[in-house]
Length: 463
Ligand SMILES: NC(=O)c1ccc[n+]([C@@H]2O[C@H](COP(=O)([O-])OP(=O)(O)OC[C@H]3O[C@@H](n4cnc5c(N)ncnc54)[C@H](O)[C@@H]3O)[C@@H](O)[C@H]2O)c1
Image (tube, rainbow, N blue to C red; front, side, top):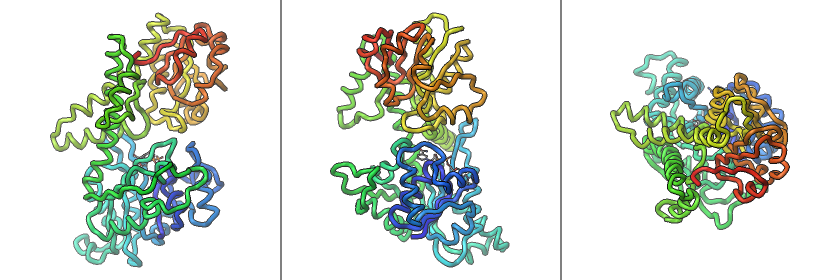
């Protein structure tokens, strides 16, 4: 099929490369010229394991190209994905301006050469299917300059469907090729069938697995979940809210575990083995971050307010998470007593490993709070320091070249991100180079025994 993907960010780029891999002719559109130049020169504008190879496969086989010309990309496509950003506004409401401008531009580019499916892949509040339909029609009317009433009658044919994305940064390609489900919310059978055709190689797992993303053992087929459009939109938001709520639950329990002398890791293992609960997303630590959880829960709260629905659990999920980021500061106070004038080293900046994404990263909140309290903050992250310096020029931290430089002369280290290389650090010599060998493990990631035998005062979360 001919496919156009608007937005070449994490989701749009992975979707484009994936669909191109199956032999579709894909054109990825972005407004960011710098991003397009990077992509055309064979590079990837952010860190995502395997993506560079995946994109190169598409560009070299002629199935994937990049453009800023949305109109011509739409005109030559059967299926048009909207995969632009939907960040939070300061009040928590989702900023849908990128969706709005993409939808209007699609409308302005439609012609009668074929019936098109416009796919909302961006995470959008319930009701956005209708809204995008309206915006596309408005874009169409603007170019046709015909009265609004008659425009729909003569309009080129299109339908809007919802196809939320569930990939996780850091394993985006694996998640796209071997997802738990593919969800399509639609109002007509023809659109559902065309989406099923588009995703057939994934649904039936008939494609040859790329070397850098091997098929998991016994992975045979993927459920194709069909719903109405509002339900699909609600599924995406509810899924993210539920995952965040699981983490906040583990974190709330971790506080009590510390007081009563229990170990949160043992407690969560014990409850997670119950198949009704499941063991994932029960790790206690400094809480969730990233581009999706916070913004999606806030958006869900906003929609609920519009309908006068209570959001007690959603609000608690956010407030536990906010509080949890500060637990490492409390532990530093307990160990160092005075924070002013101390040097604290942060191990990791990205909100999770295998990504350089710093959106809503706990590291930024923790660093800002320590600086406010009068500490000097040093940081080291294997991939996200450049992004951090570029995006947060006001953040007065010292960027270190490696863990050794971070530890040297520090009063304490705080583990923020579970990068594998931190596990294999030479803790004995790191401890010797510090003013005080104190480590606060914000993710319960390191071996307490290893750290203690290297002479560290080790503090985890909920232990
Ligand atoms: N990042 C994730 O892990 C993830 C996972 C699931 C769902 N989502 C959702 O997918 C959507 C996209 O997220 P992302 O992380 O890829 O965003 P992103 O910010 O990385 O990328 C968005 C891209 O869209 C481009 N863009 C904006 N307006 C445009 C326009 N009018 N025409 C063409 N390009 C335009 C931007 O320049 C940018 O490159 C969001 O709604 C997000 O919530 C993200």
